[in-house]
Length: 459
Image (tube, rainbow, N blue to C red; front, side, top):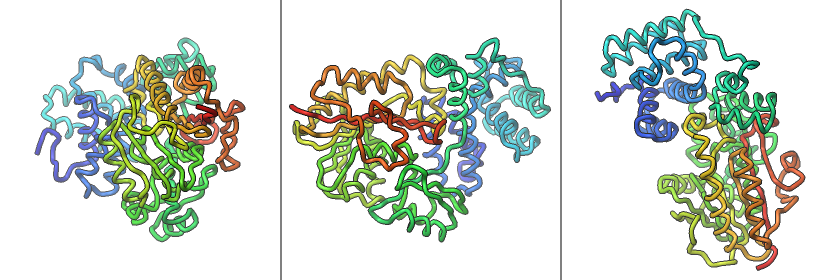
C-alpha cells in the first residue's frame, strides 16, 4: 500500500485520482502520467483501462464546467479545498453528470472509499458526500446567460478558458466560435495510419477483421483507416504489435504528404516528437536515401526510436538537438527540411483536453520566436530548389501565417508554393488560395493542422 491505495489491484477510479493529483502536484502532463500508469498496471482488465481513460480525459475535457458547478454547490471556495477533495469531487461529478451507465449510489460510495483510503478527515469525507448528494438529486446551478455575458457563457458551457473564448469570438464571431468550441468536446474517431512498408489498407482491413476489429477508409488520407469496432484493446492487437499501423489523426497524415518525399532524397525533420511523421517519411522514401530526425526532448527521442523499430523504418537516424541553434549539418545540401514546430496545440484540443487548463494566454507569445529560429536554421540547409515544410497543430495566425510572413520578409530567396501538390484530390479542399494548408474539426472532423510549403529559389 502507498498513499494511492492498493498498488497490486488498483481500480480505475483510484488510478484516475493518482494521475490527476500527481499532475497538479508535480506540474507534469496528465497524458504522460496516464501512459505511465497503464504501463505499470499492464494487467489491468480492459474495462478498467477504458474506464480510467474515460475518467481522466473526461474530467480534463469538462474541468472548467465542473468547477463552475461545484463552486456553486459547495460552501467552501474551490481554492480553499484540499486538492484531493477537489479531485474526488471532479471525478464523481463527471460520472454523475456525463456517464449514464454509472449508478449514482456507486459513485457516492466509491468517492467515499477514495477519500478514506487517502486519509482525509471524516469532516472532509462528509463534505464530499453532501456535495455529491445534492448533485445526484439534480440540484444543479444555472449556466451563465449568453445574452448577458457571452464570454463567460461560452467558457462554462463548452468548458474552455475565457481568454481563448474571447480570442475566438473576436476572430470568428459568435456562431463560428461556438461551433469550434463544441467540436473540441466531441470524442474524436480512432484514426490509424497503415504501414505501407509492410502492408496496404485493404490487407490491413482484412487482418483487423480477423482480429475482431472493424475499420473503414478515411475520407481524405489514402493511407488512413478509422477503427469503428473493437473486441479487444487496440494496442493488444497482433497487427499493432507487428507494426502494421499506428494512431495518427488524418490531418497529421495529410501534412506529411506535403513534404513530397521520394526514394533517394536527403531529408531532415526538425521536431520529430515520438516519430509519427518520421515513420511516414520513411515510407514515402521506401527506406532509401537520407532521413535525419531530431528533437530536443530526450524522452521523445527514446520513444521515437522504439516506434521506428516496431515500424521497420531502417532509414531514419535520430539526433537529440535543439534546432533553434546551429546544427551539425552541411549547408545547402538537403532536398527537404520538415519543421514540425512546437506550438500552442490549439488545433488538437479534442485529443489533448488538458491543454485547455494548462496553457495560459501569456504562453502564446513564447512560440513564434522559437518557430522563427527553427525556420532560420532550416533555411541554410536547403539546396536551390529544396523544399521547406512548416507544420503546426494550432489555429493561431501568430504561429502560422504571421510566422511565414515574417520569415519570407527576411528571406527573399524563398517563396510560398501556391500549389504544393502531393495531395489526394479530396484533401485539396484544405488548400487556401494562398497555398496555405489548414484542416478543420468543424468542416471535416479532422484535427486542426496548418502547413506551408516553401521553395528555395537561389543561394
